[in-house]
Length: 506
Image 1: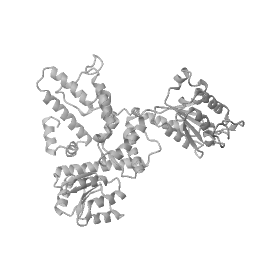
Image 2: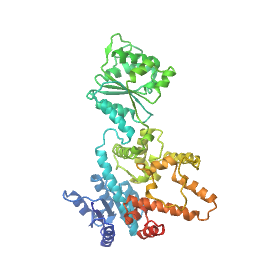
Image 3: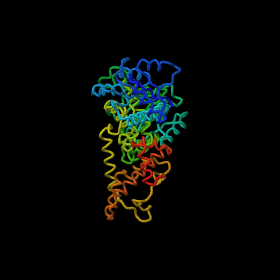
Image 4: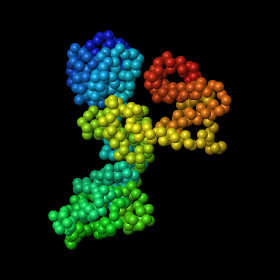
């Protein structure tokens, strides 16, 4: 493991932190001023730090200046700024410079060690995330539904067949179209996209097929349409379900014989174009309603790819969020922000009616509006929290009892808890919570049942179950290492040992 670098001109501070971190099996290296740190970072044979802990005011330079220089070369390195001058300006400057956290002196040593431990965990997560991002393709997704899409793109890679992409608005249909083009024999040709719903009906025909000079008022010169612009490549027709009915006839003619006429023209133009269409509408229903031509539907529907909504691939949300935070930071020219697991859990519980586009917008908002470099659950925009409230309300309306023969009876308040009962194999705690309502709702229902039964030990019974489940989960996460479990829970090592004994979890 890479060491924790400590920068402070006060020998006593360095000594205390070194000893405390070594007790936690965290290697350290100390420096007395920023100049030494920068020299060490420049040396190719030096191992870089896992976390940098720096004083803010030192004879050899400023910790804030060091923060700026370090972040230029190592943007993902967590930096903790500590100072005896606990003023607002220093705190704001530290966070604006990309500090992981701000630690005022004098500090509580266990809390300082806990903060450094969190920074180490964050650093390790960021290293893994950066490796994944470096190897990430133009489309991201580990969910089975997305893997099906990727396999379909692969199978179509050497084909020129017409493809119809369906999916909700914001789910990434144009990305799929671009991937189909990129991996096709036409990859060297142009990719031209047009949203047929965004262009007025009177202009759409000219946009698609072009026009001759004098074809209508204002047509001063001949203009090539999107079909000609896409010659030898791919034309992506987005929101095809909204195309006016009379234009559907002209599109069908092009797909049938490969020729079209410019508006006001008399000479046929050959179209060497692959057409990929997309829609969020149910085209079969549009055909039944008489607003979409059935013959055009069958012509487009040679190969259909359905793109899943984001709520159907929740396991991809964390990966996508980190990707969009990196993208937003690059676009705005700022330091990329990191996001906590708790914030990712809350994001993953949101329904995302706007799909991937909405997640991208939220990440852009967080890059601008989140107050610190580390995004916490409380920093998320209001609509995410409102989504959770709605989910909890819906869960509260479900019956609390299980019909006979349709599930196991609820556990008694004094029933021992086993780690295996946390969630089915392969199911994350988040998904288990989503399927069964929020855990707070379940707690409320359980408390009501116990209170109604006339028991007088409800507090003790539920507290024991809560603490048992929490400690067992932490121990499972740390593979039985009690000190590490205590650190992650935010309690002392003596406390976790005492609780294990009191709860009979030995």
